[in-house]
Image: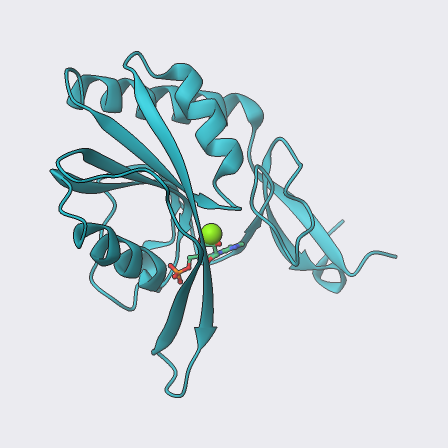
Length: 180
Ligand code: IMP
Ligand code: MG
């Protein structure tokens, strides 16, 4: 018997419409600009790949991978870049592509870090937002959907490296809480 139950939260159809909607807004807002999408690995890979296929403007794509550790006090975090971007961003418009915002530490770190390279702008596009969990003041400029404080998997998002491959989005509950 599995230890976890996956409860479907967002269907493939709804994901398609969320992504299309974000792509339309981004295409409008960055029309005529030199846009670089910076995708945070690994969780945002599927979102990025669907998003770029819906965009109506040319973009460059790069990837960053971050590791985060709980350090000392509850709210303090150590964040480290384990794979940096390779594209020069000076004078360019940068849009960070993230799967989920939770405490906000990851995005705050990356946004500040990218700003050091003097881009024309740095904004954030997050597929999902757990707004109630925020520990630092940071907001995404584009949000696909707000979600409750539940543990999300699927569509690129993992639980200990599993479930990234699922085409839909689920939340995980312990199996003993299974109702019917
Ligand atoms: P933050 O720095 O606390 O905002 O953490 C954001 C990162 O934590 C995201 O990029 C995800 O990789 C991960 N994360 C946050 N919530 C979930 C979740 O519900 N499921 C899986 N990963 C999550
Ligand atoms: Mg992530």
